[in-house]
Length: 114
Length: 116
Image (tube, rainbow over all chains, first blue to last red; front, side, top):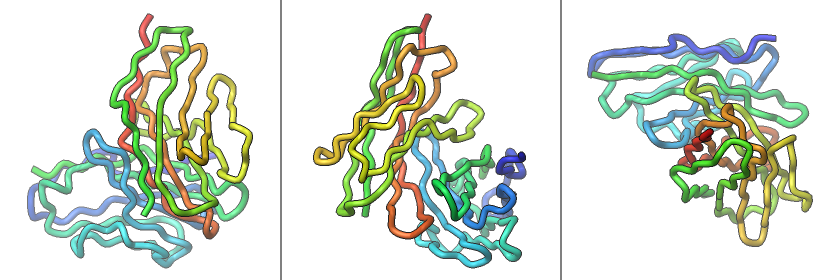
């Protein structure tokens, strides 16, 4: 079956612009996570959805970052007024509520803010 | 808050040899999960092995095994019979067992090189 997909694979934008990053989880997975991975670092948690609602958004760095999951499937991470420090790989993962709850990761979106 | 520490930024191993990657963590919880993930240049995080804290027996998956020392809060990964395809970044990660889904906390990673 299809895994987690993320689009675009790469995004280059200018400082101050608005960007949207999309995540398609594995079908039937109710939990969805966003992580940010800066160069040379491990992924850092941003936000976690259970269904349509954000169950934990404690990792969002500031109010320029926002994420939605309106129908409980696809999620969009939105970044306003991008800064050079936002440059990173943004990873999405999904998991089911049964079994091992293993998180399956997508290939990520590399965001570069010039 | 939980923290995960990987003190080896880079490791190298010869093909067919054995290598051990170190990981320590800090938590006040008694029940949790520990993971090792592999991240090749394609960026996709791949689960290598997982360990439930309540299990005393160390997890094994083919050539991969762990040494889980709960009292010492240590969780090392041993790769036996190393292969060229094992070359990648390896991340140790922690997840609370509270609730049915919760975030992963990652270490900073170890880059593993495999030489001929």
